[in-house]
Image 1: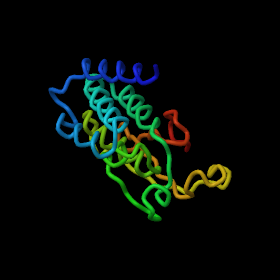
Image 2: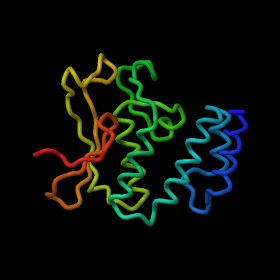
Image 3: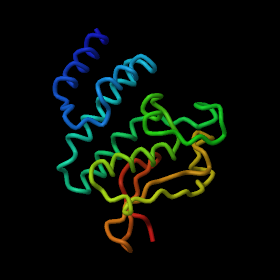
Length: 172
């Protein structure tokens, strides 16, 4: 029954998705399915759909949609996922594997927001060190990357984060 529901959901997504201005082509979707499986392909279909449906949104709504979309991906340290201490994956690798660390979240969010028309100079990746209690028994790396959105040059930025998943203004 679960497989039938998944298939129906996938068909509905495919039918309602507009591939006129796709982020990932149908050919690439087939390749992703062969290499990484159906779940990875579905993530890319949903990414296409999210980008297409978000183009006309106001900036704050774009930030919310993109932050929520990528925060559904599983957090996994590079050492476990890539067998390297520090690996900077592409958005394609992040979505294909369905996992990544904070840098992968921040970079993917930045890429998606640029595709949605946000100026790249308004988006800044920032590294910070988490407090011991924030690492939640080593689930998260001590070095943590977030994405900041600045509406104007010296404005208070909005934080997009994969640990504290809600948008928030940076504290002074």
